[in-house]
Amino acid sequence: MVSAVQSLARTEQAGDPETSYPRIEDLLVLARDNSTASRNRLAEAVGGLYFDADSAAGKTERDIMAQILRSLIHDVELQVRANLAKQFAGDENAPHDLVAALANDEIEVAHP
Figure 1 (cartoon, rainbow, N blue to C red):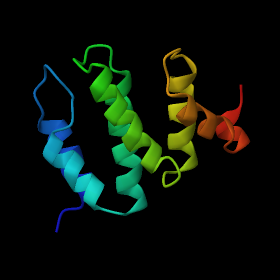
Figure 2: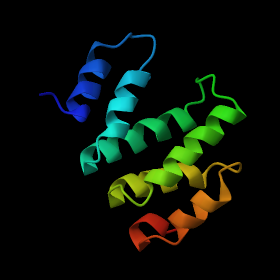
Figure 3: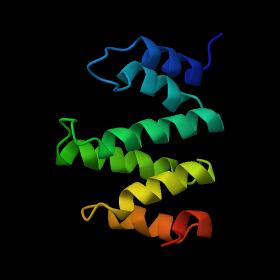
Figure 4: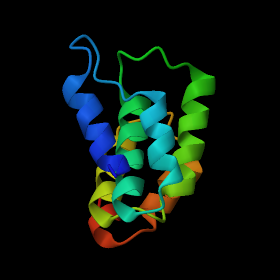
C-alpha cells in the first residue's frame, strides 16, 4: 500500500511542468491520514498554495487555506511551523490569530 506522502511525491514528479500544484485528490489523501508525515506534507502544500503569487487564489480561497493551516498548526513538526512563520512574517494580510499562534510557539518558530 502506498502512503499518502509517497502518493503526493509521485504526483509532483509526474506533474505538468507548467504547474507544481498538488492535485486535490492527493491533498484529500493527506488530510485523511493522521500520520505526522502526512500532516507535515499537507501543511507544506497548503502553505505553498497560500503564498504562491501565481495561483489564482482569491480572498475566499486564502481564508479556507488559512483555516486548514489553523487546524494543522499544532500537529506539525517544528521545522514546518518555522517555515510557515517565516512566510507569514512577510505577509501584512496574514491572519492575526495564526500569526499569534506561531509567535507564541517555541523560540525556533517565534524568533524575530
